[in-house]
Structures are given as C-alpha cells and as structure tokens.
Length: 141
Image 1 (cartoon, rainbow, N blue to C red):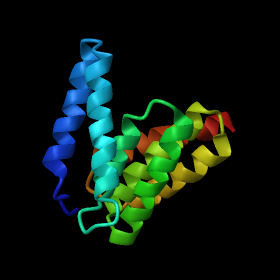
Image 2: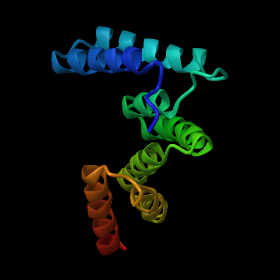
Image 3: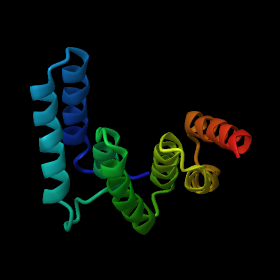
C-alpha cells in the first residue's frame, strides 16, 4: 500500500475531529471536517488524489446518504490505483453503511467484495471484521 502524500494532513484533521467530538466541541469538529472536505476537493483532480483522504472524509460523514457517495468515490480511486487494502476497507465501510440502512443485499454484496480484496491483505483485523459482518449478514438473510 502506497502511503499517500497528504497522509499527515489528513491524519491531523482526523485527530482534530475525534478530539473535538470527545469534548463535544461541535464548532471545532465541523471546522476540521470542512478543512478535510476542502483538502479532498482541492486535490481531487491532481496526482495527490488518494482513496485515504476520501475514505477518511466518508468515515467522518454522519449521514449515510452523504457518506456513501464519498466512499464510492474513494473506491473508484482505490481500484484505479490498485490499492487492494483500500479496496477492501472501503467496500467494508460501504457494507456497514448499507447494513445500518437495513439494505442487506447491498451490504452483503459490498462485504463479499471486501472479503475478496482482503484475501491478499495482511490486515488480519480487517479480515476478521469483514468475516464477522458476513456471518451476521448470512444470519440476517
């Protein structure tokens, strides 16, 4: 997995969002989220565009109907760059969102794609989480 060039900036903004949330500082959290969104949009059509920043934005987008298009954009970039770990984690995130929305067929489909991509990954925790979701979805359908 290639380390994105904007990793440190994205990571700092993510920490700002998490820290603001921990102390219930909605203004600071929203400001950091807005900066993250602006960073994603600024570098969208450049060589610095990377699924990491879009996946992070999706992770901090509260509304599922807004997060899903962001994750889909991240997934397209991950697939284009052949970043298998990102393909797996973004498919997993999409599966979770659809599961939350009780769209179980969509959730299962994305979980299967996540599982397939994760097979070539060394991220055992991600593989375990995907397997657990697949088991839950299998029992739900």
